[in-house]
Structures are given as structure tokens and as C-alpha cells.
Length: 152
Image (tube, rainbow, N blue to C red; front, side, top):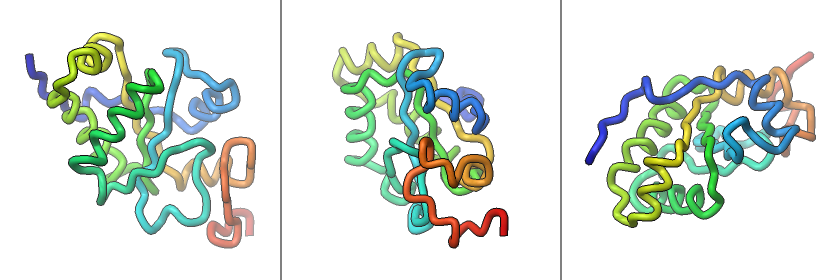
């Protein structure tokens, strides 16, 4: 049975909550993964351990690859973000959710439909994250303060 997803099926996560998940290596639901959908604005830092799937490429084989990686790793919480999480992040999260209706493998279908995989959008995107945790190498990789200019 096909289900139409809407933006109301996506939860919002605050940077402080994601910070706790990263520093404790788990979410309340178990495992999690951050999906960074920034394109050329990816330069200058990213959330530690995130996967970069540029929004402009998140179609066809790339969406299938993302589904497979999440399934293989048994990830329960998926956090999408872009620079501000106002356009590309929410659109990509919704595109991912809606793609789940097209899964044909019965085991993978069951995993996504019955195992309560949750999809989130990072409030404020990487801009808010960088303002709070950019220089913290425990949770942010390849952060370039000269690009961001925080505290100057």
C-alpha cells in the first residue's frame, strides 16, 4: 500500500540535540546518520561523520544508493541539512521519504515501513551548527574559521 508523505512527516531536530547524539554515538531510536545536501557550499566544514549527497544529485541511482546505505547500516534516525535547512534540506528529506514507496525489495520495504525509521531536518542548517559547534573538532570536521568568520 502506497503512502503519500508530506513535510509534516519530517521532524525538526535542534543542533544541541544532534550534538548529544554525536557525542554519545547514538540517538534515542538507536543509530543515526547525518545527510549533508549542500553542493558547492560544502567547503569550509561539515558535521563529523556526515554523508554528503548534494541536493542537485539526489535523484535516481543516488537516492537508491542512499536507501541501501541506510538499510545496510540499520540506521533508525536520518538527519538532513543544507546551509540553512530552509529549501534543499527539507526538499531532499521529503524526496527521500517519498522514494521509500518505490522500494521493491520486501526486506528493505519492511525495514523502512515497519521499523520506525525517522527523518529529521536540522534546525538552522549548517549555519546554526557552525555558530554553535564549528570550531569543535569533536563534532565538526574540516572547519575553516576564516570562511565562517565567527567571533571576528
